[in-house]
Length: 139
Image (cartoon, rainbow, N blue to C red):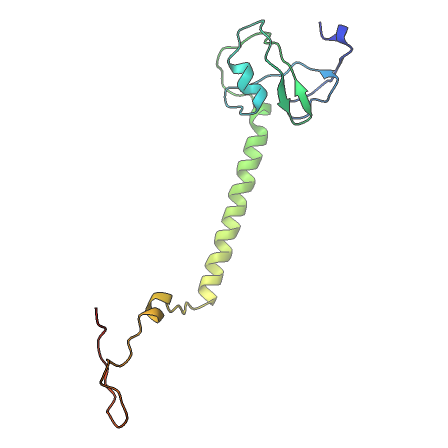
């Protein structure tokens, strides 16, 4: 149907790299959050989605079928596993660096609130020739 409209097939396309003027058979999962996946999720088999904005322009999809729930295949999750592994490795490196810096750098903090509430001499007690007195703050 789409080939009659001048569209050519794009082999090995994904929902993120489908090019303008091309058609491809794509698989969407319930976890997908891109605009096309959200619109396909609500359609029945054989229905067309409305025109949806994608990264490469606009697209229309026809739902050709639905599969029953099943465990993910290795090639479906390998990118997620790599990303999770990389994030975990980076997080461990950052934590090691923080621990190293904490061990080498002593903490010397004077909270700004303490600076703001330093008390001076009470009114009327400090004057010429008067002894130094530490007073309280008036309310």
